[in-house]
Structures are given as structure tokens and as C-alpha cells.
Length: 350
Image 1: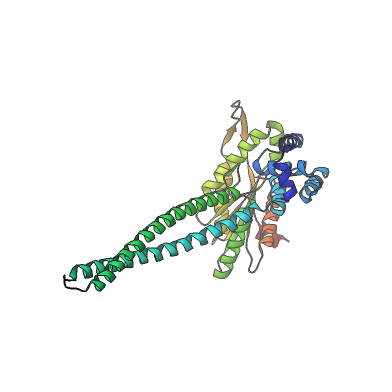
Image 2: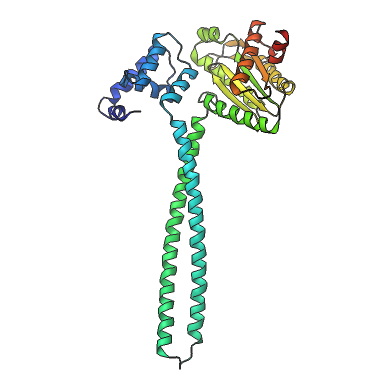
């Protein structure tokens, strides 16, 4: 965000920009999520900015303002997640430095106390005939040592307070980062978290020569369902499917809302056969339940998902793996939906 725009959004016209942003979002059927609101208030406040022009092109082109579009615009113009990551890294580094200083002060305090005890013992050992000059030197050293001990204690207390503050800051930054990497509607990983997890999984499996499978899932006929029952009920369906997918997740797997009604699961260390067993269980569970509309208790019928999966080929980049999994998903759609297609079978058929 430019400095001029930041001044505008803090000025007397900020509320007017906010009202215009909400009206524009409503006019274009854009969900009022925090990310969408931030993008659209930038658009209404500065339409000639790079963000404003990019968002304007989306509107002029009649393109639906999906989560994928919002996240792409945010990644380009609002690099908050990157900044949060940098702050979090800095917080960890500062905590380590404070731990090191704290240990050094503790060591100095212990040495000072030991030295003070030795001086006290030496003072007591001096007999009455000891020269006054020697007694004066010991007394001076004892007084100085006690002063250093008090200063060390005060410094240690201040450092403890600072460490506690940094720890709280780091916790808040970690929470901000978790929020930035989580889809607000479903609680699954969002697209940014998915991209990072897939990159890590590819690197890990490449170095360990382990299998890696990617599955993409799409709710069948969701647009028609959404148009019939409304966005709130559509969100209910998305949350239901997400809850089934989340239960199939494991410590190593990453389940994400890829965008709109599409989901993805990264399965590191699992080949296509093992992954197919996992996603088939998801597909069957999703289709087994007859959903009801919360507001009226009307039967919505069963919901189904189409699935495509692809096991990573040696040396294959993330983009290639995603492309093959997407191709398998669309093959499932063309074949009648509510089924799983392995990308390897498409290659054989071709």
C-alpha cells in the first residue's frame, strides 16, 4: 500500500470509501470476507493504482470474483503473509538472542555471588591485628560486589520482562500467520498454504526418493446448487465436504481449499494406489449423507464430488503435477461425475 493511499484510508473519507467498497462488493456478489474487503476498499479509494486497475479489469471482464482471484490479487499487491513470515522469523531470532543474554547474565550473577561469599569468608578470617589498609580493601571489594549483584538482579528482571513481551509478540505473530494460511470458511489450509506445502513435499520426496500423490476434488453441479439454494446454503455444503476431507487428513497430509468449491490433498510418501483408497473413502462418505437446509430443514439431497489424482513423476515440478491431477479431475467430470480418475490411466489411454 502506498503512503498516499494509507493517508487516505486514515483520513475523513475512510468511512465513505468503506461504504462504497461494501456497496460495490454487494453489487458484484462478492463475499464480505476480510481479504475481499481490504482489496475492494483499496479499489474504491484508488482506482488508478495498480491494484485498482487489476481489480477493475476483473470486473470489466465479467470474471467471477472467486477466492482464487482474491488470493492472486492479494499475493501481488498485499504481501502481508510474507511480511508476517519475516516478522515471525525475526521474533524467533530475537528470542534466541535474549535467551543467550539471559544465560550470560545468570552465569555472571552466579559468579558474582560465589565471589561475594569468598570475600565474606575472607573478611571474617581477618583477625583483629590485620592492617587497616587490608580491611579497607576487603570492605571496598565487598561493597562493590554487592552493588554488582544488585545491578545484575535488576538487569535480569528487566530482561525477563522483555523476554516475556517478545514471547507474547511471537505467539501473536504465529497466530496471524496461521490465520493468513487458513481458509476462513472451512478451516482447511488456503491456497497459499497449499502452494508452500506442495513445494516442501516435492523437495522432501525428491531428496528421499519417496512417492508423492496429489488429489484434487470438486463438488459436482455446485453452481446450479448455489443458484437454486443461495450462497449461505452453498457455504454450508462447502463446509460439509471440507469436514469430510479434514477427517481423512493426517499428520503428513495437507488438505486445502484450492478455490471456490475445489479442494486438494497432498499425500507425501503415498503412491497412487494408497491415495485412491483415501479419496474413495471421502467420495463415498460425502455421497452417503442427505443434507438439510439449516434455515428451513428442507432436504437438499445428496452431494457428490469428482476426484482426480496424480502420482508425481521423477523430476516433475509442482505445476506439472497439478496440471495432471486437474486433467484427471476433468476426466472424472466428463465420465459422469462422482468418481475418481488416476492420471496414469489417462496417459495409458493417450
